Image (tube, rainbow, N blue to C red):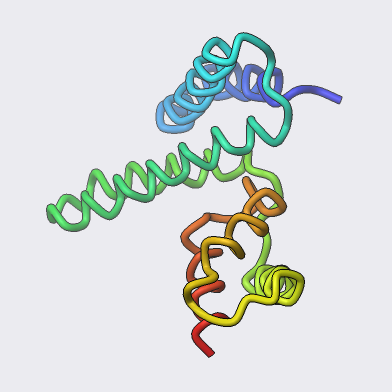
Length: 149
């Protein structure tokens, strides 16, 4: 089994040969983020840690798209969307909203959470299980929805 960095390196070579600048740029950013995280940690990243780094890159791209749209810069938003599609290909399979609903209901039942004041406890229990598989904002909105019923 190849590691994520090996896969990124091979994909980077392929993008270079194909002269696909946008794909190459996105892959380089992901590789750079992973290598920087490894350097900061002082050891190789495991799959979960790598997923967290890539999820951070996805979040940054989404924020850049939002900002470009607010600034009425469709060309920048389009460029970021292409990069986002490339980066998302390296994330593990993402959980659906229904799967998150099920996990959140289990966590709420286990903790005996009653209302919005228990949101932090539920999130603390839920996030380690779903980290890297879905955006934390989505999890938070599902938990808030369930606790406010």
